[in-house]
Length: 510
Image 1: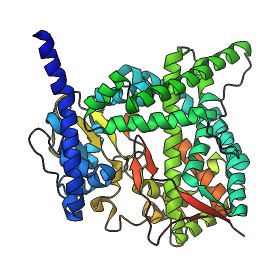
Image 2 (image 1 turned 30 degrees about the vertical axis):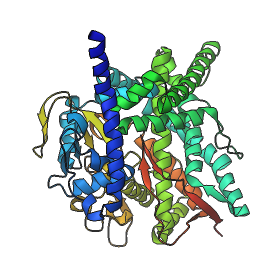
Image 3 (image 1 turned 180 degrees about the vertical axis):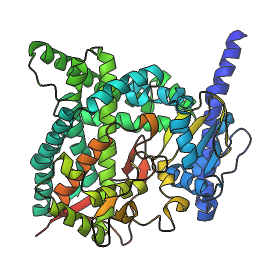
């Protein structure tokens, strides 16, 4: 009888969600063909047992846009999404709530078990997936290293060499041959080489002229993709069952993470040997600095470095991809940026790029519309009430949504859909120079805010401005589109992407 009971429990726990999944998926296909744009803008209806799963599946391929529509129609810019079997998630685009979550009640809103479990196979206990004392310890180590001038100079030299020796020649060759490039892929390769050099002191040569399929990079891409699928899975029991059985995406994830972590472990061990054999070895890269500071546990260091690669590669490449898309359709903005670049062409070191205020504003404006990370998930460690009155129960998932926040008319005005760098600027005097006017980080949490604000923010802007200067001073980016009025599709897993890549032709400027 006990075995029969266990079997019945197994069937109820694992097979019922599968049945519901296929039932809703079939129903959503039917409803999707009848769904009007006005229906997608209403608050989702919730039903017994399945919650709002029908609406979730109908909008599965436009999740960020759908959540934005719903938040826009919520009076407080917050709503509770009822999922299957009583799982509720709070979504918010309310700046007061974001400040409450990221600062005022920071310790009440950690990453939580859901996020840590979903990402642990890939990120381990690295800083992007850590909470409590472990996070605080890694943050202290990282903060110290990121604030050193020598690391800043190293980053500057890495970016400059990758730009001049690899990126510009590839773009120049494409312009000469009038060939089509996937600029998203090129920028990912550029960012991957950069962050591997900065974090590991290792050059994967992923942006070599042959554009090789590097095993480590391919495995990293696959691990990011499938970890993102886990995070957005309607029924987490499904991926857990697949992991237990070693099938489907979970088998692919196990193989990919094994390659990533195996390679990273080899690099860590090799760096240890180098440091031991050569006491005078320059400790420019982040890995050397961490090891030299006495943190020698291989798993700990590997977890940290993998987190830094994810943070440094996917975010900057995504931001630049959408930036060049927006610039390609806004010649006035491009002209202003080129004018600023030419004024400072010979002075583009770290201190000088900080003065490129129009370029800085254009990058901020691009990330407002297309943030590299569209949403961030927390888990309530206790009962609470958000500033807008939303009741939070212990264990609830709470998600703030930068993608939606950048589209709120109440914050950005009726012209929120326009790409307008001037909204970040003011003239010091009539006809004078622009000065940058930053936004409240809880209104614009693209780099997070509060204690977990991105440590690499300044270095990310340094890298992006150098790329913008290096590309726009010499080239015009011309998207290859199949029809008039084409708009690329914004998709996201752990980070955002342009669906299908960004095919372009490069035109050399005279």
